[in-house]
Image (cartoon, rainbow over all chains, first blue to last red; front, side, top):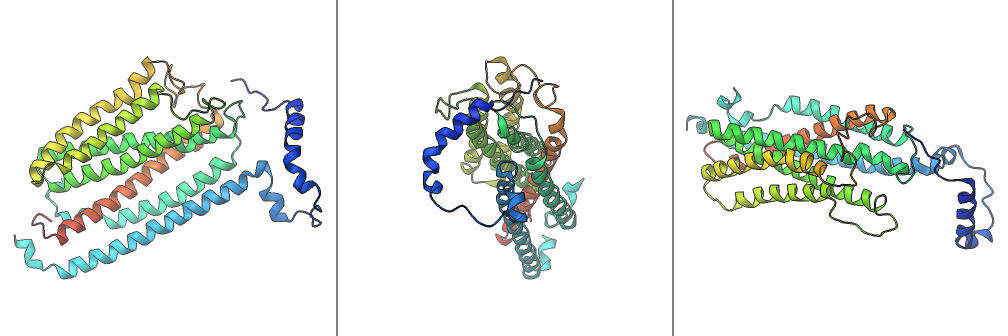
Length: 92
Length: 240
């Protein structure tokens, strides 16, 4: 398998120049004074993929909570049905 | 054979809970690993290669689901147990949902790799087209079920159709796309297991993802079987 370089240094410089007009709003504002907190240092690394991971995990865990709660409702419903439907049904 | 047991005990709830809890933890770990483990960085693909962990298992899961469904359809024809009909229907439904997610994630992935710069979302690539046809075949199964009112007749007709539908799966998802020119990996071989299409660094997470999503299918399918049996009992169906 050949592994290609994603971007050449020229391409990086070109991208930076193309982005410059969009950065102008921020160029005039004061840069944040505070050094990056430990949390920021982690979350902003690796092209900020950790932020995506955090979002996906929140969604996934939210769906799992939903699944578990639905199961508890089914459990309760099954108990109710068992209690309400008389046993003589078994003789049918 | 479980066909002699009462449908009220259709689902082993204790086993269901165990599998559900394992699947929840398993897939959570797998998602973290899918984002954090290093992958080979390739042009065009870049980080989208990580989609392999999510998009491809959708199809493995869909195929597992339709064969579970076909198995229960076969057993329904053999024994006439209405629980088999319920299982066939619910497995097909959950499998259809996974297939739909596979198709949609494939469209998004292709848009920003194959068709980046071209600005198209759909170009009738053979693999995608056959996958869409496959979903339509299962769509017809659900429509067919609504057309017959008498439960036994509906179960029989649907089961026979379902067996034919399952028989088309290997052709539409495996054989035909490989006979045609497709941009999809694996047009020249077996993509999931070949040496060149799946980097060694990506294999463990990919296989873990396939197992995890098939487990998730089983959980959702079993949950729906429980609900369907409950509904039958509440409707006063004498067989439940």
